[in-house]
Image 1 (cartoon, helix red, strand yellow):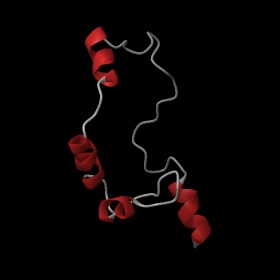
Image 2 (image 1 turned 180 degrees about the horizontal axis):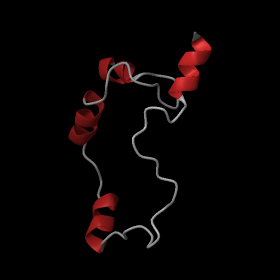
Image 3 (image 1 turned 60 degrees about the vertical axis):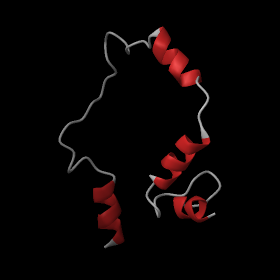
Amino acid sequence: MALNYYTRLYSLEDVSAVWNMLPIGGFATLTDGEKAALLKPFTSEEVVVAVKGMGRFKASGPYGFQPVFYQQC
């Protein structure tokens, strides 16, 4: 039963489209304004909104804590 579950999970059985190649023309480049926006400091309010917007019991982060830990602490 477990073997069938993981075989199907990691197969392309239910995938409607498979993309095997990267774009031939390359990726779109960022404008100077977009680059500047990435360097803009973030506010504590933005961090709170991002953390609260995460699914509570989604995959754990790099230290093994699920988002619910950060939301409660």
